[in-house]
Structure formats: structure tokens, C-alpha cells
Image (cartoon, rainbow, N blue to C red; front, side, top):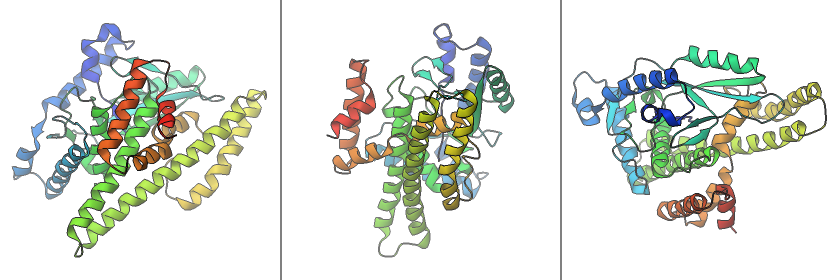
Length: 354
């Protein structure tokens, strides 16, 4: 599963007086972010540079192709992903989430532009772990994950990062489309809708990208082209399956948490519920790196990216599998929510499907 953070860090310096961030956090984030932006080079120049490796050249060509495909879908990445920036680490940043153990109650942070979000990014794993330890002392359980990409939601020319190129080709296409969608549509204070929607667009867009590629080379497609198309289809199916698992797990655990049982009994029962869902999932995916143990912060993190994917698929099908019609419908939802703060985007989406 491709996971990303919202990298509006330079904006935070400008709007420091409006945010709840500490000055040190903002200055540190802005320093790292500005370094990334200052190291940007035009992709065309990097490709022409003799010192560029063949793998970098091939991956950057794929990025440019995926970006053009995103534009053909009706997305508006602006000038993002036209430049390349090498970074010194394998992981760009670390994202911290925290939740109560006996309830799906997330710690939130507020930032300009995006509003309230249930995660906070750090460029140092040690800083993320230090903050996580502080939250644990307050009764939260924490979950920290690495990320290799960021989006400034179209405010800056987001570069392609060397961390991104470490991914498999299908994931790179997914990521470029996902982040391009963020630059096209973002509804403040609705992170689960925004991220789940962009996740759907990323996996569906990657599947469409490789399906179109395969059509162009028929009937003499090289084996790799067919393998990539199949890999994109498998990723799409896997995201839907994991979305179903997270939905069932969340609903079952929610019943435990809202019960009148003692905290100790809730903590015991939640392990039983968790294992009942994980045993069959582990059999199908023995190498999966998530769901090692029950952790509300991890479950909620996954839920942010996997909520109601089937509704987005239904809307896409209702739109005739046409990206222009689908995006127009999503923008209608955005307008409805932004004009009436009482409306919830998922509720508006469900109404569209009636």
C-alpha cells in the first residue's frame, strides 16, 4: 500500500502564527523541505546527464509518462513531477499517529490549508519516536511509519524524489497519480475521504495506465508489459480486500470499545477480535508487514486510506468508467461540502449513488 504525507512544510513557516506547531518543529521541517526544493533539477537534464544510472533514467521516464497520463485523466499536477531531487536517506520522513487503546480516538494536529489531521510528519525517526513516547505516557498507543513521498497540494512544484524511485514501477505510477489527484481535489478537515479517494484513484489509475499500455502493444506485447498489467490488477484487488478487512475489524472493535465492560476486559477482547480477522488474512498474505499486533493507531491509519473504496468504485462505474465524469462528480461533492459545513463528503457521495 502506498502511503504518503502532506508536505506543506514551507507554508507552515509563512503561517506560523496561525498554527499550533512549535516554532522549532516548523523551522526544522522548513529547513529540510527547502533543501529538497533547492536541489531540484529538470528531469530532462537528469536524463541527459551521463552520470545518471540506467535505472534512474528508466524510472524517471516512467514518472514523466505517468504524469502525462494523470493529465489525460483530467488531473492538474501543475509543474509537479517535472523535476528531480536526490535525498541522502532511504526514507523521506516518518509519520506518527496515536490513539487510545480502548477507543478509536486519535490524537490530531492542526495545520493551515489542510486543517485538522490525525498525523504528524518528522524528518527524523528519533524525533517521531520521542514524541510517540511522550504520547504513550499520556495513555495513547503509537504507530510510526516511513514515507517516501510528499505533496504540497499544488502550492509548490513537487519534485520526484530518489526515495520514490526505489519502488516497483506499478507503485511509482500509482504514487504519481495519487499525488496529482491531491493537487486537483482536497477538502479541508476530511482526511479519510481525501486519502481514501486518492488511494482509489491511484490504484484504479495505475490499472488503467497499464491496461492502455498493453492495448497499444497487442498482439505482440513483451512479457514484462503483461506482467505489469497483471501486477496493477492484483494491487487493485488487494486494496479492495484490505479495505473490507479494515472495515470489518473497525466495526467489530468499535462494538467492544463502546460496551460497558471494564477497560481490562476490552483490551482482552480486542485481541481476540483482531486475531479472528488476521488468521485467514495471514494465510493469504504470509509476507505482509502490517497487522503484526492489534494497534488502534495502525488500524486507523489504514482506515484513512481504505475507507469506502467500494463507493468510489461504484461512482467510477456509474460515471461510465470515464475519468472526466468521475472527477466532475467528485468536484460536485467538494462544492457541496465547502458550501455547507454540516455536510459530510461520504454522505454526499452515497446520495449520488442512489
